[in-house]
Length: 294
Image 1 (cartoon, one colour):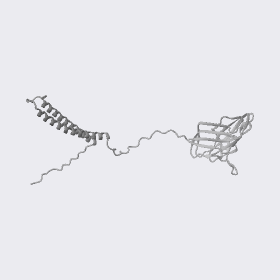
Image 2 (cartoon, one colour):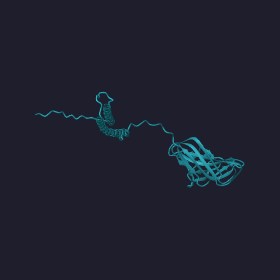
Image 3 (cartoon, helix red, strand yellow):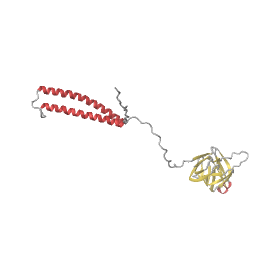
């Protein structure tokens, strides 16, 4: 006898998680529907026995009613067990639906988005100045600037001439004189702030002394610094009358747009001018300042 030629049928059935959950819910619904039909049939059995349904020609005896009641009771007990099982299955399936399943694998990285808008300009670099020891400022005949104090980063020097709005830092004999720094890149000076506090009392009755912090610039390779137009801040209040030790003046000049080239040398000088009765004066005090370069 030859062997039956039965083909090797191995179907590939793929069911997604959502499809499986739907199939389980459908099977539970079908079982519930079947239970409903059985319950209706048991109810009709009781109705028939008590004579509420047509077809019974001979009235049921007490024994018949007891038998029907026992049969219905046994069937309903089994149905109750089945209903509890279906309830447990339904809660399990609904729990799986609400949980949403485990986290899937991370998807592929999307393409790089477009370049965003250019951000606002930064706040710029702040260059701080402090005299360290007090500096001496003088005014000469006519109330003009006499000698000035050069301010560095915690140090200073007094008695420097700024005649004609220029300062020469060539120096001789290694004198303390060079308080200039070189700009490493081009930028723009936007703000100048300054502060002065007297360390010697003054008698300026009938006179007024005004202190100014002035920036000077030298282009390399020069040692001659020239006052930068607009690169100053005038301190207030001006000194007048009986000036005590610790009298202060301060000022801020903002909104500037002074260009600075790479390798420009910048120098800050405190200077004074006078008006009134006494035009030749000497002012001594601590000086500090700061400039912003964007």
